[in-house]
Image (cartoon, rainbow, N blue to C red):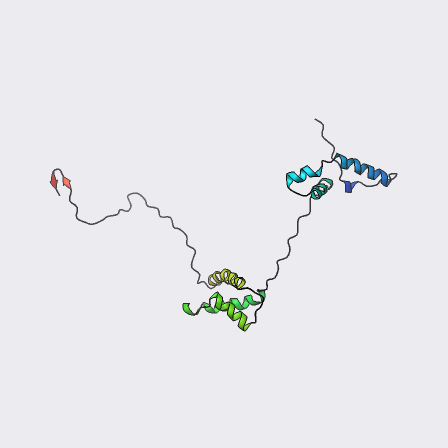
Length: 172
């Protein structure tokens, strides 16, 4: 069983001594003619012809995409203030705690917050409030089902009441 010799990528072909550019271009043209056409492969893999052509001519896999650094939020300067409000609400009676609407209005009035939507503040408060409760040790423990195992004959259920039965022809 004959195996095909592995072809070098176009970028790896170097000009040797005594070889001019026309020979190199001719060699590259022959190599490109031997490659499969990119259009059917592009349809098959749902990509662009240019991307398929680059993949066919390159011996190296594509470099992994870099993740962009996390963007800073407009809400970032106000997060410590919101956290402080939520921490002070832990000691306040239930009816005197801040609602999301009240926190938003305080930030606008006291801290001159502009350009930040109510929903951004609400999303942060909804996520952060349980975390603060857990940090303070006041969060409700997660509800975990407890399996009950009943061994046969160990426990019995008894109901009291008046019952009449017919026992050997007599009512008892």
